[in-house]
Length: 195
Image (cartoon, rainbow, N blue to C red; front, side):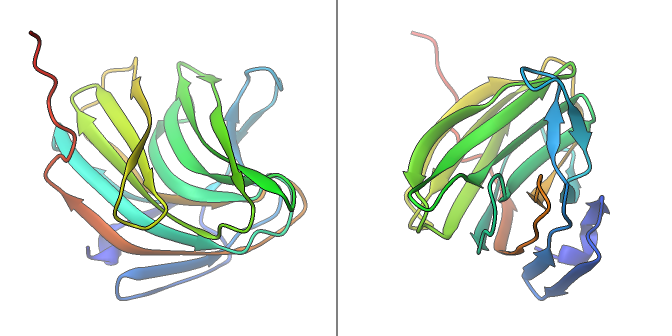
């Protein structure tokens, strides 16, 4: 993909692109979250996004990182506005395990679905697939064999969407994230045929 077609949402001070690779350093106290449980609202994480008008597609990106502190995270992002978006990533917890998961925010309220993975994992490939108002998130540790993370629905009607990479450090920390092998193409999520 041509990375010059992407644009920033909350750009970090330090970033660069080189052909098909984006490298960035997160700013401290950055995050995406809306209201649920914790009560706070954050909308200042770094998003590197491209507009997609098609109603069916798959977008994927390879991500690598060197986390420093609790809650450091980077992955894939679908962003409509402050109240409607989705992110998927590995979020650092402690030296033993981290959280592979996703947050879907509809109408201003976030949820968080996770599973524990080993903290020595420092790379992942993610894929978003769209079929109309519905989306599939997958991850592949080996970069090829995708596993379903979740299927979700966006309550606000979406025409074109902005999709891409994101990274953030919710606490007073900073780390380097590298995104590569951006792809956008035909939908890899097979349509469900009713019996």
